[in-house]
Length: 463
Image 1 (cartoon, rainbow, N blue to C red):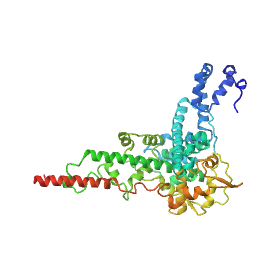
Image 2: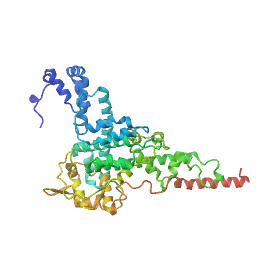
Image 3: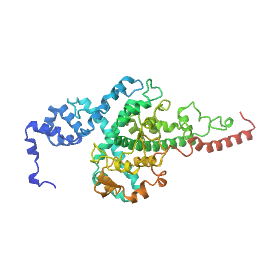
Image 4: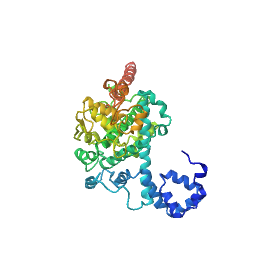
């Protein structure tokens, strides 16, 4: 309920408060945007801010990132120097020794302005991906659950999106840290093994934190696959516009699809046993959120080509998928603790999924069992990200007993989980199950060659 005008604090009253309280108010603001609005409206608060600017901004940065996620954000900042193929392996292992151990949630000292700016710079990218995830997954769900489409005009207001942002922020910070520690171009000098990545990082995440991590992994792989679809169309457009090679008469196949040019090789191996494009996608997950943002925001053919990166090195020997597959199986947990629906606990979809499929579930993604495929489907729309309230509004949860939640039967059977309906809709399948670019261009090449041979025969010369 809004306060009556007479009960609302006036700007005169706020500006007449003691300076110490004004400083406290400034430090308590939720984010930098709110700070900017206040400083533009109040010359008095602007003067106070300028006197203790570093301390105020440091506190607001902590508020904006949130105390629960701040230690992870600090880890990302402090370890950022390790994002190099020449990173010292010993430093990575030294950090991993204490990763996820309990510690103070708030910094003991004020951040410098430079550190505050760097923390915010990364956090803005994290927020970008959190917002993109929510929009993308809700829009995708609406195709199969049409009744939620009206809710999407303003999802934040309609659904009360809140804890979802915090869960997503934690997951994307985990991804950024993972990439910083384990980026593995082919020229890396000191590789962290799959087993080390698995046991020293992934295995230290709580089971449901790992599931949240896998939800954003699935989302990003979907996005990267769509990006590569566009890159392929760019390639094919150039192929047809550039016309046939000069030596087409002497070669029944287009020799440009060989191993000498990385760009052509990238497409020639698509769909083959090497699955080079899928490996590129796995490698891109560790190239950093800033690079991923540039990839997903590339809108022209030249931008997409540039964002591919160095195709000769961005093919990791050790992929995240291999590290996930090295995790031990997660056994059935019949005594799942009651969820509090907070950042420190999972939503009700987690105990429901564990009860629904009692078989051992692979900690990673390497499994062909029906239950594992269903888990992949759940991850694809982010089942563990949403709050219980959001799941209820979307019509995916109904309360049948006071201590047990389960998914509505019509959504379970008809739209979301039935295995024979899902492969073409949800779940990250191996990329490009259809024809490769080389196969798609072969018919045009054959037409060009037929025309070239006809010209040669009519002229009576092959030279």
